[in-house]
Length: 366
Image (cartoon, rainbow, N blue to C red):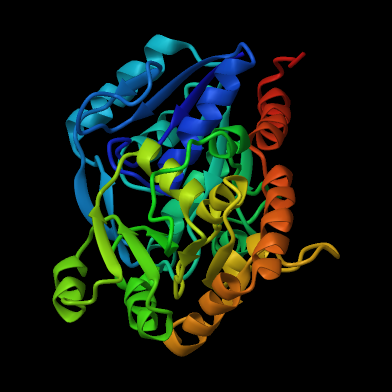
């Protein structure tokens, strides 16, 4: 089968949607399918099967800054690629994002599968409901990555929905070689954009409740970086890493004693939690809808992470100490985490998508 994957966000910028598109592409290619990924890039394409659609510009979205390509030149490249490739099916991620995804829906050169990732408050869906309904009618299959994402978009678009949770490339994280780390210290890792919804400020405020032999690795950057550095200047337990590549992220994840994702909202699905679980690292995260379905109790199985009230640095400090100070708790989280990661594997997700691709295109999948 020949599949086009359309991503609205620059593949040069780390992000959850970008990671899903690239991971799904790798798994489809491994199974012998022909794929092309159409997306903006701000440098060399990160995958040989990427068709670059041009550079991105930052746009405010869901409490963050999204690297989109809404300019006419990117749309012309999108149209040209869609006509040239003759896809059996086109899989569009975030169909309502301005740029290549909306262009792909309106052009509709092949059957369309649309996956919606965002959750939380999205005013555009109210103000431009007519456009959302138009887009929804052109999709041959509608997918939401979580119940929270479905709850946001279903009232506007309606129709039949599939909930297919995001996937994790389990072997990639399980096989990562741990980063060198101080042998006599406990390590907490944060990876994410330094903005309010990611909750980094909550984690840094919680450092005062941790033991003196703990180090907190802070990866990433964002609009709050300089403010937070200034506020916590002189705190020797915080190590600022800046933006790191995927290989370093995977290795640091494998080396850490705890992966902490203290987000306070706006997350539809915690794929980064699953990545840490696949690496064998216990997870402490904000108790929000998008994370609860990943790390909380699920279908009679124990919780795979410790969830802390969002925005509460005292409670977060206690949750981190619970894992860092009790080896039995940490070991149980590692066991449950690996089981949870296997459940949400990219392989299982690809099986589900191939079923949808075949249903909408009529092309059988062996």
